[in-house]
Image (cartoon, rainbow, N blue to C red; front, side):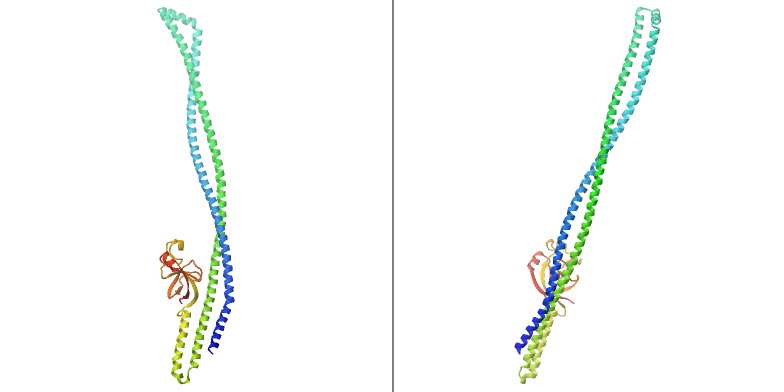
Length: 398
């Protein structure tokens, strides 16, 4: 009888296992396919990010070049202002020299006219003049002195005329020099304006190139965002599938435990039936009580004292260091401060879900692992390393 019962138990467990295997295999295949698709999208995301980095680098180079062009434009503007200032000063000199030249020419002309009148007068009245001077002179020396004075007047007129001519020539020479300088300034001004126009064209082209890069970056960022959304959706899908798989495993384990408990109860009942008739009254009562106790303990073990059994999960440890979290502020995905003995990380369940692991109740406050992998928070990295990795039955606290 006992052998028959054991055989029935084994057959029952085998039936449960065989019934769950096709579902498990199908779910595992979906998980594998989704992970492969996720890895493919991750590679596409990495390639897209590389293109974004390359485009941003080219854009930054152009923006640096644009700053250099703007600096050149600023230098040219200052140079043009200096040229304009010198040109204005030169023009003022030209205006002044023009007035001086005009005045010098007028004096030269007046001196020339005066000299001509004196020479004409002296020529027309030369004989009378000398006769009058001779008659009016008290002595020969006085006559010679007056004659010398007339000669000196003529020489003075000639000297003054030569001096005015020389002054006029000097003014004209200065005017020509300043005009040449003015022309050189105008040439420099035109050269600067041409250079300015050339730089403006380069600036315009550079701005268009920057806008083109900005458009490409924006498009690639949109592609990256779409890929990240797909990866997040695939991550959620994987968590859902893993949860489904774990639920199937948990259901299988519960079925096995319930079958084992039923077998134990059946074995106990069989043992009671074969007991001697003489001790049936008290012995029967005494024997059935342990049977009930065994069944209750088995149910408690399977359900976690009324909580939902999730399955046998992998356990690891982490701490708030940058090596574990990529940051060191200790702030969880739920916004709370991670606390040892309370905080765990796992995907696939809502934040705030209570999990009982080895008799301790934890709260899912962080992410970073998929469903079925619980990362337990520790205060230090050495504690997390010391905890290592293992497996345990996990219950959701209802």
